[in-house]
Length: 200
Length: 200
Image: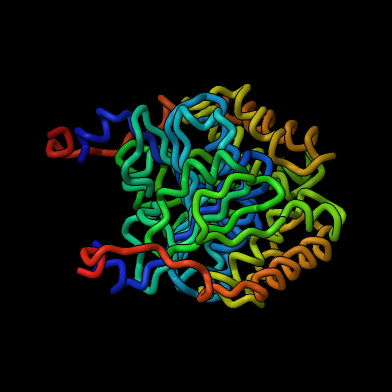
């Protein structure tokens, strides 16, 4: 599976948090930027089971250079966790040296030192004036960090989907998220300890 | 595969048309009604490839009594086509005696006599006053015809997702779609001719 994933250049992202935080919207905008504007293969998926009532919400995006046979995420390259429950539940789905990005306004206990913490909700509330656009601040950060989407296309996709009259606010939120990501030294993050077996 | 699908009681719907017709939103509302409110297993997927620039848009929902391994639609139980291009492209993905529902305001050439035609866009424009809610008229029709979602939960999911201030309009659109569906005699539709092999 590992060889196949590398051959396809597959990249998996999960947006997670609470219902009402706009994670599906963020994932749909991301997928449209990559699929419609960048012209790559991308699948965007929501899966619900009886546990969906528990208040956790997740939305996944899988990007590839080739047609995607299996659209669900198997091993995350990047997990966004916008609350503690999602961080706790999904942390173990990240692959070795994948990225964990959390909203430090809402997540207090960090499961690892290999973590990127940005107060998305606080930035949205205090700087943009609307807590609701925390999802777009996070989207900007994810877009920059993953390196798999043209950031101009990400903004185009966002502008095409948000309600009329909210374009500027959402666009500012996205830009603030990109700025926050630019400050991060990803190479300087602690690396997961890997056994020799992991290289096989 | 047929036996496995029947055992799982799997049901597959594709919402298709043009970008901008709100098909992803309709599919997400449907999936949330089934997954969050009805508490069943459901996957909702958007897949994009380099052909996504062509103006066709599609969103899929797969419902099952059991966890869903493969979230893409394989053989449609129901296809909604909101324009001619989508009707032409996806008609062949419907299984024998599955349902084809088209927006007769926008689809002129019907590929089969086994078809349900409702002018969703015209109803939205002339009766609700906003062409944009044609997706919710269609959602009401699909919800009723598929028989797989509690219609009160469909409205709850819709109200939780549409922009504030548009709740009543969207709710009226949904109800109009349900009313249109109630007029349809599904059992009276022509049935696909099946060879004896199909029963094996």
